[in-house]
Image (cartoon, rainbow, N blue to C red; front, side, top):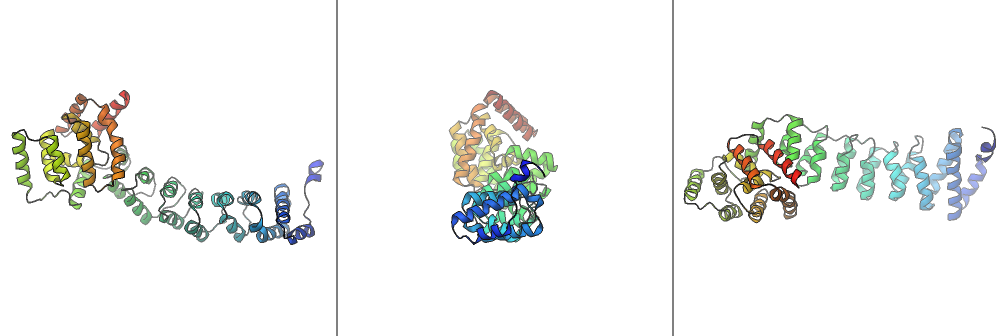
Length: 383
């Protein structure tokens, strides 16, 4: 290099650097670090291995003692280098997040054991930084999931470059039953096996159920079997219940006497009489029991909203039935309130005529999801 730029380029004066290193004051440490950073930034490619080793060694000994702004500058520059001593990188990665962030997100020198140690012992901000790295092993992903922090897990799931083991995916699928924010990113993961997607069908929203059907080729018979099986496994409804015939006869008798009212439906469900509720609901709506069961146990409540609107239930009556249906599925009160808030806009915006039209198609066993899509589209247009 020639001309003025060459004159401005610092030279590596070993004695000068070592002299600065001997100064114990914070001002001397800052001057030393700034001098080294200037050398890296202006003359980095021309430095010899011996010169680089000298500067790395000096930085290693003083980096904990220099002020934050200079440590940030050091970390930003060293994060992209491939020949930095591992212990120096680990020091920076364990620093305050403003210093550690570029190293945690960019440096390829951090080993899995170092990353896992940081995940377990540093802050949530450190965990988030690790979760967006370009390369994440299965072991590091597991450690991130083990933090239990919702933001960290969602960030990891959205990182297409992260590797996630099957055991961790199975755990996340189960967690998605109670943590709604996991559901969509879990379904987008390449590691998700079809049988896990089938399991998730039972508790995700209508939109995500459509995604599962489109991307995992679920047969409608499989879906119906899943819903019936889960209701049976949870002890909610048994297809072989001894009193099933009596319940059916009771519902028929009450219907004939004009006593199948919203209050009776709410009372049956609030007392845990799910089989009686289903029998009454079938009489009120004219749909078959397997579909009533599916409507009751779906997480979003779209089908329940349509049926209740079609037969003339008020918003308050629907809200009560929806709340009890969610309690049957052992959902917490906060989750129920959120779900109710999301479904009420459909109930309020749809017309009774539109709902009745959908119910009429269901009585003929036709197009459950297609009908929900159609009425959602109609209510959105009029919202």
